[in-house]
Image (cartoon, rainbow, N blue to C red):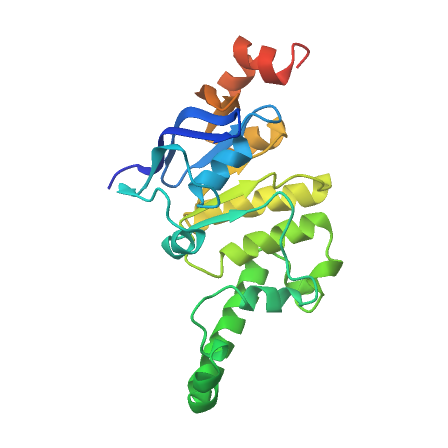
Length: 256
């Protein structure tokens, strides 16, 4: 089996006269945790949006498991197991935590009035199975004490954990995490990083993480890719990134 799960090849994307992604190529290995860092405006979130189908590239290709998935829609990529979380969590604030999780799986019998009436036993069985899985997910991430809490009442860090939980409700193969540590206190940030490592080690998740916190990236990532002006400036281990003069001058700062 090919070690490369996702490959971005010669990708470019412009907005008006601004080239947000400029002939960018990266590879994400299967069962790895890859970090993407860079200054604001370097193209990190745009790259995520291109890979996950939220934007269409002007040039270039995206491959997943060796197949070209360029220009596929987000729901098609979701069905392949390609998921992302956003810098600002997108929870259903008026629903409880467990209800948020139960919304995730597709093709539920209860979504159709006819099947929910005429296949009521099957519908109830499926609903109970989804609810049981949701509880197992919350327990795995150690947030089962929040099961009946309204999602809108959660802290920023708890919402990030809820987003992670939502990825576990489907058969995720790779999860793109956008600024997972933004606005999160240190104790919850440790819980999030521990959960990512646990999912990686026990569930064999592949992760790609955008993050400004270099210490967070250092703890988690096998490979770190540095973007600048829509291009790959450098890639290597976290230690190599910290010691690279070009990265220090353009991103980390001389006093780092």
